[in-house]
View 1 (cartoon, rainbow, N blue to C red):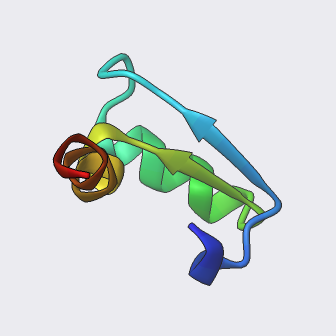
View 2 (cartoon, rainbow, N blue to C red):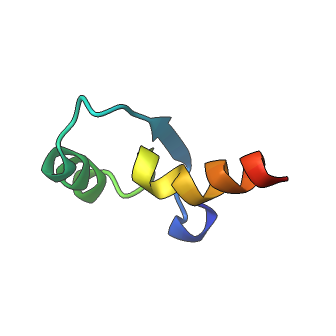
Length: 49
């Protein structure tokens, strides 16, 4: 997330399709959607620690 340069992050569920997420990010590059796939490694690391 930090490397994307986004100002805003929005945690979403499976309500949006991958194309809808891509389209919204493309139209507003300062917003990044935090999907489960994008944060899964972080969540897994928290469980191990």
